[in-house]
Length: 103
View (tube, rainbow, N blue to C red):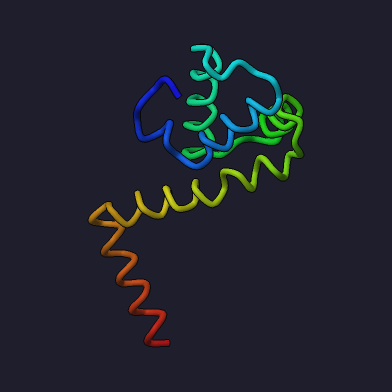
């Protein structure tokens, strides 16, 4: 992709790029690349709602489930990493783990 940053290197961005090519989109076009980055950012931070998922699936010629499977694991990992990196939340996670072990 034209943009060389962490977001463009995500698994979901690469998945979108691949399926965009298969669907016949010009993946060298700046607008296509910006769309891929925007969709990746939304999917990995907030997830895609049902309407966005359906429209994206139709545009790429895949099922909505294919789209969801393509990003949800990476999104969950990103959220967990962010939570664990926050000092207060990391301490809370440790405390909750300790409580669970003591049950």
